[in-house]
Each structure stands twice: as C-alpha cells, then as structure tokens.
Image (tube, rainbow, N blue to C red; front, top):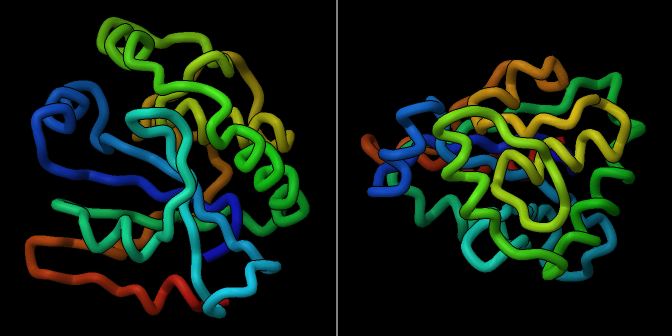
Length: 174
C-alpha cells in the first residue's frame, strides 16, 4: 500500500445506512506511507475526513474496528509521480478544517461543489487527487464515485467482518 491509494468502506450503522441510499460505499480515505517515520517499519496510515475534521490514524487500528467491508484500490502506476503532492496536501489538511455535515446531507439531493472550508470523506480524497493533478473538476464525488474517476486499479477486499477476514499483510507489500 502506498500514499494516495484509495480505501473505501461498506460499513453498518445508522449514518452508514443513510449514506447507502445514494452510495454503495459509505466512507473513503487515502493511504499514507510515511517513509521517514522512525517507528515500526512497514506501518501504514490513513487520512480521513471524519467527525471532528481531517485525521491521521494508524491503518491497522482503523481496520480492526470495522463492522463491514473495506476495499483497497491502488493508484494507477502512471500517477506514481503524484504521490508526494498527495501526501503534502493531505498532511496540510490535518486539523485545518472541520467535517462538512451540511454538504454530506445536501449530497442526498444532488452533488455539491468541493471546497476546503469543511470536508467530508470523498471530498477530501477528490481534492487531494485534484491538487496532485490527476483529476479535474469542482464537483465532490460520493464515495462510490471515486472508483469511476479512472485513477485506481480495481478494488481488492481487505476486510470483511462477517467471516472475520482481516488481511493486514497487504499493508506491508510493496
């Protein structure tokens, strides 16, 4: 897993069920591979817009708490040179803005314009990719729309809480 790779979630819960009305996936985030991190080698992080704003979390901790499924979609190789720009954008957003509950609700009725004042999950992913120059536009996608932007490989299921599958070994493969 490398910086800029997409993580999409299909989880259970009240808010998740509402989001499923208009999006098969109900949450999205990006992988961060902090090469210079001096802690445990091979660890991966995720950046997500969640309640309270944009947060960086250890990916294994996030995956252990999932009630549902998580999919990993690698960024296509032609965008490898964009990974540093994605990381810079994502790290710059940490703590810089709040969560965009208003636009999340407006998404029920139609698409909203992406902006940095407040962010919801797929809006953060879209803006990171846009800042890196790999997508264009102003309309914030829903989580299920991200795979349709054509910048990732097909998704790979990495967590399925029903049969108890959590394949964290994928997180350390090159």
